[in-house]
Image 1 (cartoon, rainbow, N blue to C red):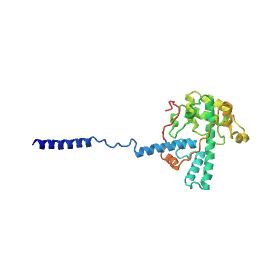
Image 2 (cartoon, rainbow, N blue to C red):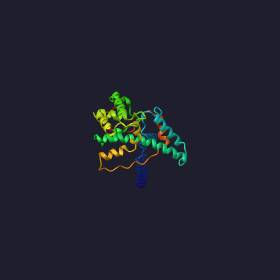
Image 3 (cartoon, helix red, strand yellow):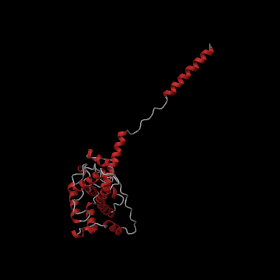
Image 4 (cartoon, rainbow, N blue to C red):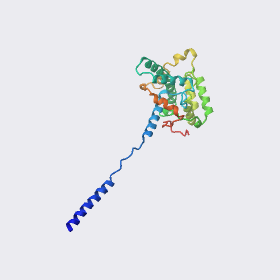
Length: 257
């Protein structure tokens, strides 16, 4: 009897222990981010890269059709996305796209040079960063911003005067107004990039930033041009579905809202 009871207890306890061990097995952890969330962040990264690469003149226009220059670049990108990669047509379109982007980068470099000459060396990139979600409604002084932008367009060669000034730079001016440096920026731009005669404009736009940066910092080395990055069509098509995207605008820490 005692042996039978001992055998029963051993069998029962073993079953209990096995059941308890089964209950204590950790459940398989679900991923922190679902597939939809990963797709959302991936799309956001593509849109940021789209803005940084193409420097849209009207960043808040997801269709890129409100301005002639944006529409021209967007159409080139769409045509290239439908062309076989590596073909002669693809290479020709890439040359045209890079030419448009180079003009826009040159304008941005002029703005960066003026900011650096005013002492905003560390903040220049943040002051120039504009996302598709940046709203005109959040500007501190929109009328003054437009007046300053018009003054820069008419009194300096910081823009290509044959085209209307890109509205993306309104946000930079608005941030400078908050910092009480907008008027200083306009004065410095007039000094570094004085208005050119029409016949001299083409020559003036060849290497103005490189030469002026060398004058301001003769001992500094010239940074290498970042390698051109091609955007896939998903980054562009994704911009049509939404009029705004606030994917980590890395602007300077100002109360812009």
